[in-house]
Every structure is written in C-alpha cells, then in structure tokens.
Length: 384
Figure 1 (cartoon, rainbow, N blue to C red):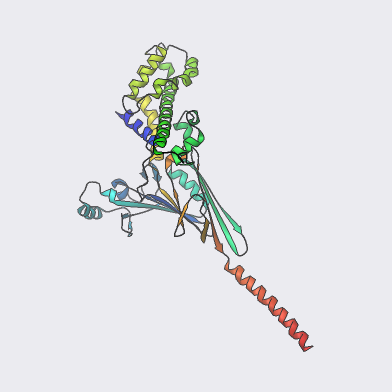
Figure 2: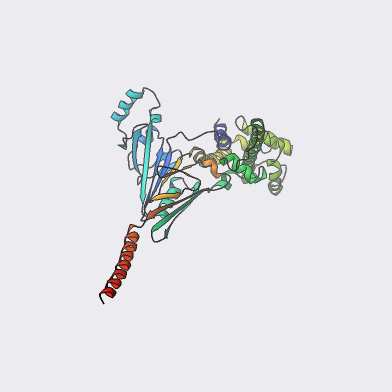
C-alpha cells in the first residue's frame, strides 16, 4: 500500500540510524585564496541520470542538478573520468564486464560547479537541495603580516523541520538525549556497561518512536481539520477538534501505533475510540487527502534520509584548526548525514594559514637596510 511505503521511509528517517556512508558519496568543497570556490558532489546515479543529455535537469536522490553543473562519471575503483552522458556502447561494454542488472551500482557520477564567491555557492546549494536545507557560509581573511589566516564557516540546518515534524522533539527527550541519538554527541554512554547502554538505547528508541507516531497523528489531525467541512455529523465542532488535537496525539494508543502496517485503519480506530464516532473514517479511506499530504512530506524526508556524503574541504595553505573535522593530507573531512540535522544545525569551522612570502622579503630587506645603515655610520665614524 502506498501509505505504508511512505511511512516506512518516515520511520527509517529517524529510527534506522545505523545506516552509514557507503564510502563513495562525498561533497568536496575547494576554497581559493581569492575567495572563489567550487563544489563537487560524488553520487550514485541511476541509468536515466547517466544517459541524460547535458541540457537536462536531473534528480539524484532528491537533489536537483541543473544543466550548469558539469557532469562526469567513472567506474568505482578507477580514477579515469568520462564525459556525460554515458553512451549505449559504453553501457554495453560495462555490462559485459559486470554481468548483472544493477550496473549503475558500479558507477559514480560527479557533478561540479565553480563559483566566484561563497555567497554564490551558498545559494546554489539551497537550489540543489530543493530548499530542504538552509545553508549559511562565510569566509574571513585575517591579515597578520607574515601570514594570512582563512576562516571558513558553514552551518547547515533543516529548513522544513516544522513542516515535516509537527510535534516538538523536546516533549519526548531532552536536548542532550536527542543530540546523542542522532549525532553521537554528547556521549551519554560513557562509563556504562553494555547492558546499561542497551537499556538506555532501548528507552531512547521507544521515545523517538513515540515522537514519530505523534507527528503522524498530528498530521492526520491537520488533514481532518483542513477537510472538516466534508465531515458528516461530526461529534464535536471544528474549534473543539482543534483544542483536542494535543490530547489525541499523546494518547497511549498513538504511542503503540505500528507505522508499517495498516496505518490508516489504526488512525481511524483511534479516532473512533476517542470520539465514539466513525464520522472521520471516510477521510482516511480517501487516498487523495491522506496520501497527497504524506507525499509532500516524503519529498523532504527522502532527501533528509538519503543525504549521507562525507564533507571534504580543501583550504588555502595549511590547515591549522579543523574544528570537529579530521585532517587527512591537508583535506578536512566531516562526517555528515541528514538525520544529524534533526536535533540542531550542523556546524563546520576550519582555519588555514597562508604565509605571505612578500612580507618575509620586505622584513628581510628592512633588516638588511638597518644593518647596512649601522655599518655605514660606524665606517663613516672610523674614517672621520
């Protein structure tokens, strides 16, 4: 059933946090000394995206790339890149090598865009992610004579949180608990035995599951509210129904909902039991109202769930402070996934240093000049 499929995605977005990056997807950002920059995304394409003409806008796992993005592809494990689109001859040749129906799983696509400024890159990223994410970026140059420090900051946040999750998360878990569940920090498991950790995680999972069920029921209440004029013989007025929404979403029956099976029937039963009336049941049997709302939410949740690139940054000069990232061969790596944005925004802060060679030359010349003047005075004094 379509509704069940969508709800599986909803549940997975917040509960299946054991999923990890496949080791290939990444977003490489290069910052240059003059403030220009570039961003390249390495993604797993499907056959349509691989063979799409370059003047075609493509959608890859919820990310929209317009024709101004340069596209290339390669076979996993091979550094040689080929121009897009992939030809039928190339496809057939690779098919003979891998002998399976999922050839695209062996291929990577690279989409790259160059920018004149950080602001241009920020605006572009918002369009790619369909405004699901709000991204702010800044680059500050700090001149210190012998060197210049470059401080790059980026903050990614979930711009559609209130549209997708209608119930505040802090009603179910504390801020630290939510952060630990979705990001791993702060480490609440420190000092606990394995058994104690399991007990703690089971308790958190139960509350997170309740939160998702409550959000689902809140969505159902909103659908009913918007279509209240279509309800025949409602047991309460629309104003009374709105006032009861919070009580409905926090019912024990909501906490025990199974979001995978027969969700419509469960919601209808909860409404019938609470109001002692089946007046609202037809709304959840009508596919248009319920499914269209979930389809809209699914657009955002699918992007949130599927976005798991490693964030790589290349800065001018040598990195002297990577923030929460890890430096490998002067490339700063940040581990990122969409669900990390649920408790709070994701922050990137990197500082690099570029030596000002001319400053050393000028300083050396000034010192030599000073020394020369000193010797000149002494020699002149000795002669006189």
